[in-house]
Image (cartoon, one colour):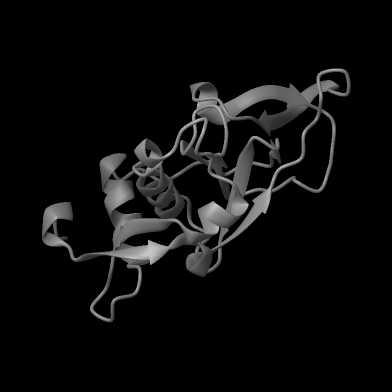
Length: 162
């Protein structure tokens, strides 16, 4: 397998390879303690702020969260069912469902965080237009197989348990 610096990379508009949606706030007085992760805009604990038993239309599994507020631009992959607060955006890859590729993509998104701040938030429209550098295949398309293999090797090649 080629090393990262030997692989061709290309900027890819995130909205072309993923569906992006807003989260939905669950205010403190509405939160009911439970087992479902509630993703906020933090950097600790993979962005999980609380565990709740609430439910709403932001619930998703196998998605990437990107902070639009707080730690703007920080991205985390969530292989489990989770609810997403309004201070982050949920990114669902269009042609990818494996964990390794999504972990790789989340890291590539996080590399863009220096371009954002509290006064330059990363809302839905801006996130859709965000250009992310990704390794590409010979046809110039994102090389998801390479990303999956690379991430797997970085973890030591062990099967991903979720």
